[in-house]
Length: 368
Ligand SMILES: NC(=O)c1ccc[n+]([C@@H]2O[C@H](COP(=O)([O-])OP(=O)(O)OC[C@H]3O[C@@H](n4cnc5c(N)ncnc54)[C@H](O)[C@@H]3O)[C@@H](O)[C@H]2O)c1
Ligand SMILES: [Zn+2]
Ligand SMILES: [Zn+2]
Image (cartoon, rainbow, N blue to C red; front, side, top):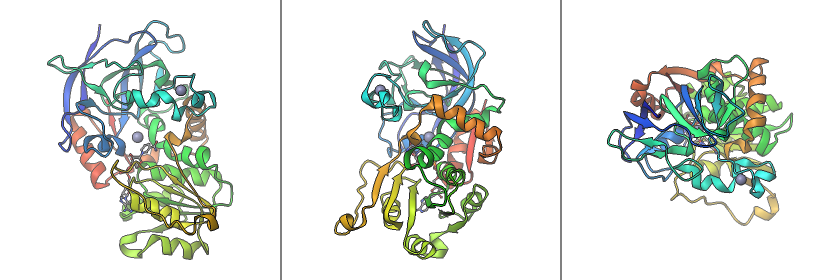
């Protein structure tokens, strides 16, 4: 039947987002409609509005949410109306070599499902009947969202929606980069550049892994205070403390074992590579603009055996990792409550985006 829903729409690049009433089509085969209860505001949503992530508007934003199943399409058996779910934003074909190897974040289908559902079509229309894109293949910054059944993971523990929502991006991405992508060992030294929603989760992932030194870098002292709450043992603000690479080399006597870039800038990716020790690993989590290039000294590469890698969605396997992350939260070993430093109504979404840009929050969450 379809439903009308208030939604956060990117109409035009480099313009503020707008809240509009859109039409969300009922689920087709293998799809579900979710009544969204909470949706986090991630830097990737902002990056979709300014061309950093180059996707064409108009689109409904949002990829970090929790909600309740409102309708199920044909062929859906693993969730039913009324079930609580978290949203995962990766498309999973289940057949490509990456899916089969247990690396669904690299699924070959994901390139197609960035502005549509996995079948290449949209379930979203604006008030004039024009089709809207699905950002990140989901579009969950809206009262209702129709998504593929593989984009919902049943929420089987008692967790409030605003906290559960964050598992679907910030927590999976940040903690996963440390535990799944880099596989940080106990006793390691870790650098995290950028202490926003993603970086704070890399920091708490490093703490979970038993890292000895956890050095957080951010331009905002407020973020560095959050970083300490999440387990940072040392903090560096380049505005007052100078070159972070020199500081890290000094603190560690030659470089960290692991560095995580959680901003999305070429210069900080270079800092991560330059701050790791011989044989260390630098992990790029931040999504830099398409036009940026990284410059690294070539001569020393063979002599240092450093590893530079990316991390997509924390190398996540949502059906394995989401329940595991929630179990850690329930055991008081993973912080979710402290991540939510502000909540907004959907009508306040423009302010939530302004606050993300100005760095006011650990994570801001829209609650419905
Ligand atoms: N790889 C993935 O799968 C994945 C998933 C989600 C988000 N991301 C990306 O991760 C990045 C971070 O997202 P977020 O939601 O945490 O953003 P955020 O805005 O919450 O955090 C970014 C932080 O970086 C700090 N910062 C900015 N410039 C800096 C500099 N030069 N030096 C030190 N600190 C600086 C800011 O003060 C802020 O605290 C974005 O690029 C986002 O697109 C990647
Ligand atoms: Zn995100
Ligand atoms: Zn696949």
